[in-house]
Image 1 (cartoon, one colour):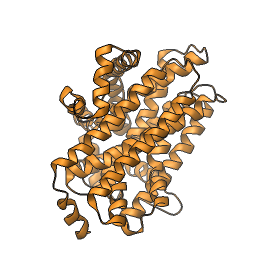
Image 2 (tube, one colour; image 1 turned 120 degrees about the horizontal axis):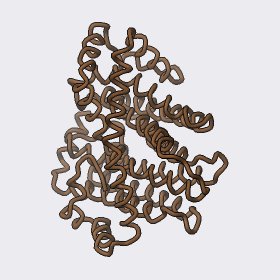
Image 3 (spheres, helix red, strand yellow; image 1 turned 180 degrees about the vertical axis):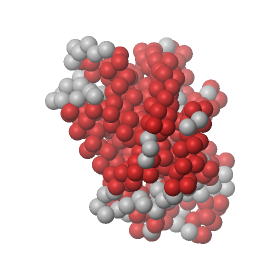
Image 4 (cartoon, one colour; image 1 turned 90 degrees about the horizontal axis):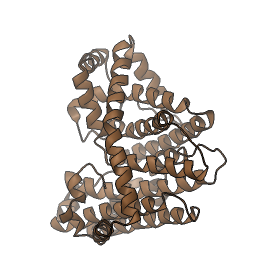
Length: 379
């Protein structure tokens, strides 16, 4: 039970949701689900400082040793172009600003601060333990013995790739960490290079899977930008396309925790984590709306609000949508082999996501939803 806001999973918060009360029951009974969760949560907590130190040092080295950071940014922009869509304007930064950003990030303490800011993400905190569990479950099922260094290379590479979405989103949305956006623009190309290098060291199949997932995620980001420019064009099809940014990144990382290329686990892991990622996406949209007092563009709450004219109904439907995604994630768990080692952990994970979504949905009752109506009309 990890999130950017740890209070979401304290005793008081757990008591106020159906899923939270079930979690407390699992803890009190010390069930196999909770014991497995506790094991992987403790493992992830232990590994996170190592992961952070490694990423800080690799970023610091890459940035300080690069004589042409402008070239690196332009290469990154060209690489993430898709179907004629370009991020030139979004990533616009002049040479003077690049030099200033490089000078700041050449102080390793500042580099560490920026890394810690972008690692302060629900998707990192909620999924880091999951990848250890999926990796262990797959290796156990296939009777593989793989050393920890290779495991860490695989998991670290995918966590870095997932976390790349954080600075990119902050740059595109311009609603958080405004004073650090130039630093993030410089960091992004190096994060991708580091992630790709780690993943490519595992196998050609894993790298190809990553590249396809990264391409699909860019399609989702592309649709996200289109809808930001024209929210009234939102329909169910475009929102489903937009959600590829969750589906592709999370699903691909899960699939790549399976080291056997023809294993059926690869499709099952993709299905489960893709749907869990989409469910968390709905919860994030409710959380963000509460915290910034405006409905995110694009989002399921905005889609439903525009089509029903009823803000409360829009959030009700968004919560129901999150539960549909989560039901689909449970179907993937049911597809797993009967005695799959980490099935109890995955069931506990789904319960945690359900609590997270329900927690923020219930928090809406504390707010006058006319606030959202006013802001919606202003748009």
